[in-house]
Image 1 (cartoon, rainbow, N blue to C red):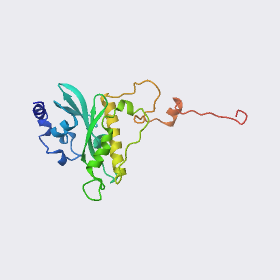
Image 2 (tube, helix red, strand yellow):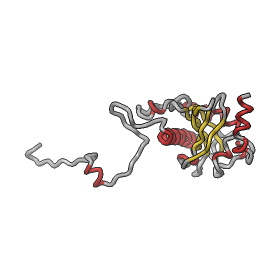
Image 3 (tube, rainbow, N blue to C red):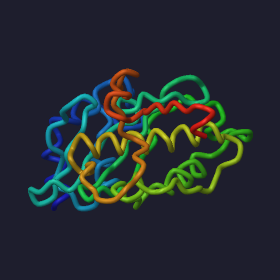
Image 4 (spheres, one colour):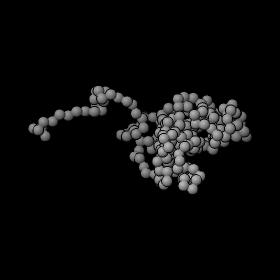
Length: 216
């Protein structure tokens, strides 16, 4: 019943497109968020709300409450793979800051596919699935951890993983799921604000110290 209600709610969004396999990453995000994809990434959902913002973010609801967000690496991170082209991975982020899942929608990586000399989608998805259940409110401020690698398409796989992380953190900030309001000292490897050299000196981010031979 809930799935049927969801199909009705999103019919206006998905009526113009077919399956996600035929979606074009340069088309609106709505064209990739099919009912099948949404229920795959979020269990027992009512539907998706308006897709808004730049990058576009879709709100996912259950019983009238927001439970998470869906977004695309292509539009959020503008990644570049081994092929030199972008790729599209839809990522699911819960309101608790936990990555719920992903789906590769489109890519042009020559070493990933079904050929005998290519790395299978199954292996790539298994590699990317190491990000599932990751709490960004903790991980983004902790030391980077090593992950299991993937041979044969290392550059492509790591580019995809990096794009998923960058996109998830960006959307986390944009939606207020994560913030800088935390105690203690930490190294934030994701947020960035550009400053001039003069500004860095004036706010004491960079300091100068002059010493003579006598003083040392």
